[in-house]
Length: 328
Image 1 (cartoon, rainbow, N blue to C red):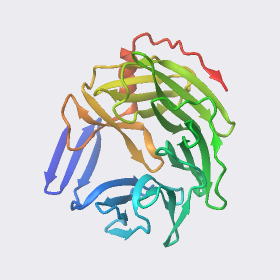
Image 2 (tube, rainbow, N blue to C red):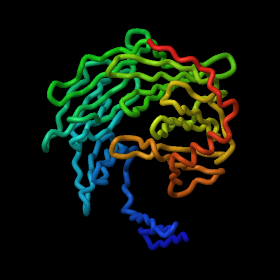
Image 3 (cartoon, one colour):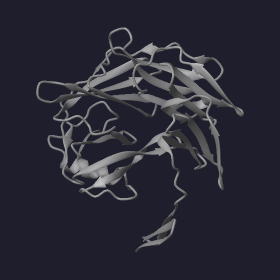
């Protein structure tokens, strides 16, 4: 049984399955006007934090207090490159200032915003900016200021500040590169142009041991339409993305040591997908479809890992992986 009940501004969805009633409630708030961009994160209590960019480049930080919004203007104007909450639920932003080409780390300490310039070069949007225990933050970025694109890792500690960046050797950014975190490992997925297609490379990095595993699962005809999504459960990992609106994937069933060849699939065609964001960052258990078979629903369709992986495994062509890993 499925019931969908709606009134102006509010809706309920009820699903009775195997004697258990599942339900969800959606409340539609007042629209916000005069914005050019916004980014949001959610904390472990389920409360939303938003940074809104006004048309004049002013920045507003707002957080939901359970019954009302609390908002304040930030002391810096510019473009938001990254926004996270640390493990103590304090907001941190990386901003490119509007009046000079400097990257600023802005964070809330008590009731006051603190600002500091990054002690390293950053010439592209951050690859990954995520919370670690004890208020620390993990960062992966790119620097091309010396004529060559270099990837690096660093950690911010509230007690000591930013660590000296550590370059990632043996990792080439290619034409497109994306970074992910799962169970203490950094996964770097990159597309490298060939004459007629793209080689797909995957680097698995252990930041603690400073080791990496480089794999080449195969080739793809097109670049991804948007950022791919990593879904995972135990030792099974699944990368999903769309190319020309068509779903594509590759997966590993041994913890990332070997991978199936990347390929396109015709289920959910054409489609677009987005990660489902949670308090720890993108969820590895769900993905949101924002377009399915040419339809763009008002609310995304969220699908869990298990049925998606079953579909991908069922339709994969030549499932035996021929990529050969090597450590660096």
